[in-house]
Amino acid sequence: MEKSRILSGIKPTGRLHIGNYFAMMRPAIQWQEKGEALYFIADYHALTTLRDPAKLREYSGLVARDFLACGLDPSKAVLFRQSDVPSVTELAWLLSTVTPMGLLERCHAYKDYLARGIPPSHGLFAYPVLMAADILIYDSDIVPVGRDQKQHIEVTRDIAVKMNETFGEIFKLPEPSILPDVAAIPGLDGQKMSKSYDNTVELFLEEKALKKKIMGIVTDSTPVESPKDPAHSSILALYRLFASAPEVSQMENEFASGGVGYGDFKKRLFAAIWEYLAPMRARRAGMDPGHVEEVLQAGARRANQLAAQTMARVRRAVGL
Ligand code: TYM
Image (tube, rainbow, N blue to C red; front, side, top):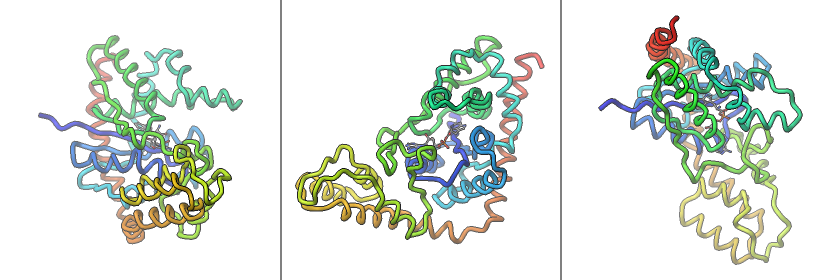
């Protein structure tokens, strides 16, 4: 039986955060053992919101380095920059010729921009079509993502069906893989952790900066001695990701019984995060930038090989 192909991407619009790690990077790293995995830095997509060339280059390098530090193994998975495979934009064009406007008008990211009064660019409107091209050009079977990307995978499937109906069976239909426990990780203010809400906890902060962020988590004004609401606490939600099961039960019990203040809980959360990330921090500190670039270039060669096979098939099918 052929190995399944696993694919996902991450935008280099800032430093990687805990939401990215638990929803996408950690599962992606686990998937590398189970099939042919391809992961890329979505720099074309980042350009829909980031217009600072120096920053784009810096963040792209950091995402690659951090992904490797977190355990991505380049002997098992392919890591590359989206823009090193320019044929993906050709496929995006071909897909856009069959993509109904209405399908894109229904997409949340686009509607959010409209709701916030920001005039969306054509790139933002067409964002899901490029994402479909990313997925379909590598004949991907499984796409590990957080819940916010679910709709985009559905759009990808719709576009693939349209292409297949129009031009014959060109594409297989990918499935999202969304882990329920980490589908939407809250940020410091309880909303979804997101660079656009400025509520992120980055993976590789300095000790002091991390402590400051954690101590700054927004809490209600329940006094120390009183029981606290476990359901809406980002402290507890984040602690569950980093602490052991007995540590989590202890904190849950102390939330219920009262007698421990939020400050104490935050200190424990900080310590758990700091310890959890220690091996990755060590790997990151020892990483040679030359090695990162070599990994990306080898990744680009493999990704281009696969993309070329698909593009030959697609060009033939549409009549080019
Ligand atoms: P991006 O860069 O916004 O996010 C990368 C991954 O992290 C997940 N994520 C979260 N999951 C749970 N809780 C959170 N608070 C949280 N914040 C981020 C996202 O769901 C995502 O899986 N459009 C994609 C990049 C992309 C892509 C693709 C992904 C481009 N082409 C093709 C898969 C396949 C994005 O903006 O991810």
